[in-house]
Amino acid sequence: MGAKGWMYRRIGLAALAALLACPARGASENQPAADKSAGILLNFPENMELKVLVDYVSQRLGLNILYDEQIGNRLVTIKAPTTVPDSSLLGLLESALRMKGLALIDAGQPGWKRIAPAPNLAAIAKPAGEA
Image (cartoon, rainbow, N blue to C red):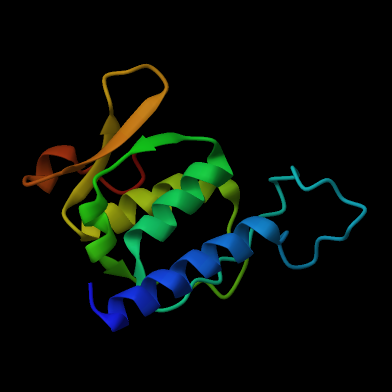
């Protein structure tokens, strides 16, 4: 990995650490940090490694996710100027994965998900509005 790749990795990891450490905008110190109804402000850098989003969603939602280090080579940009409810995080991750030809599927072990190549996205895609 070149110097530019290491720089993006450091920026992405720093952003992840900052997001995990900071409550959503408008939250006060008197509110419990576990209040997930208020939503979160996603303040990721442009062209971050997809791994940063996966790690963030995994930590925030308490999901066990298995993935190959190759997802670190895939970059995404998320622009969310307003707070996003926690309930939207999994869908956001799944959308980002689909953009990169990947899918979040059951890992075969209870309580685990894994990221796998999805060569035929039409087979796993759901029509808009379907849960």
